[in-house]
Length: 282
Image (cartoon, rainbow, N blue to C red; front, side, top):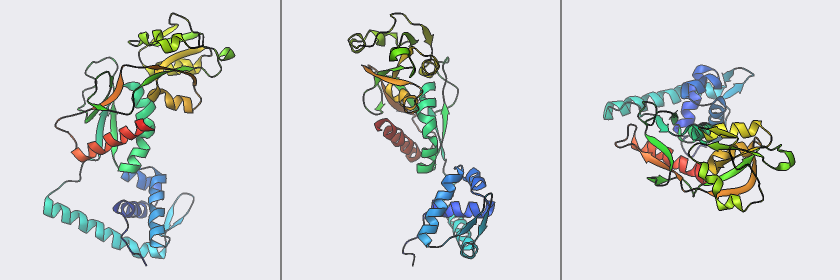
């Protein structure tokens, strides 16, 4: 006997998959991955103790229990939507939160986390970034990620720049350094001077972003660069670059700025802010 109601998100996944005949098509409707929809349906099936679908290589068929349950679920969803709109006159709440962030943060931190964010919170994030324009692209952001000395809301612990090297550097020793414009003073830090790592005193290359520095180091034996730990983690995990073990404390740290008043529903923005804070604690 079922002693509690299934969650709304599981029922919506079942409804969409039944109508579309495919987890992939249901995912496109719900803005989820096919695996996320499949997982929600499996959770629902475990909850009910019955299979709702027969699964084929490319399609789905409702079981007898699925056929019997579908009109009940659809009627309940329709009644809930009509009742909510009739009493409160509400449109569906916004599900998109806009985050402005540096280019490397978007590519190395935010982009890999988007599927998890969509799965956990059912929120789509629109990421915006710009290198050349000081005010960025002309999109009103709900949240802005900054790397600076004085931040409004701190994200995670203090930041250190890791000396990352090409993993196939001769003798494991970097010989050519890549500078990121505006952060050249990191190379003069005591942590570097007192380390056994020896690199050239002058830059072999200069780039505008840490993403560019990571790509140069990953593709060139003997090259190295100083990259904030938050931005370097993914490339280190993937083996594209190697951590030399040298870390230089940075004056700047990552933080969040909230748009006031918020463009998107406040609680939804706060959920994304909390999610980003957790990313920095990992």
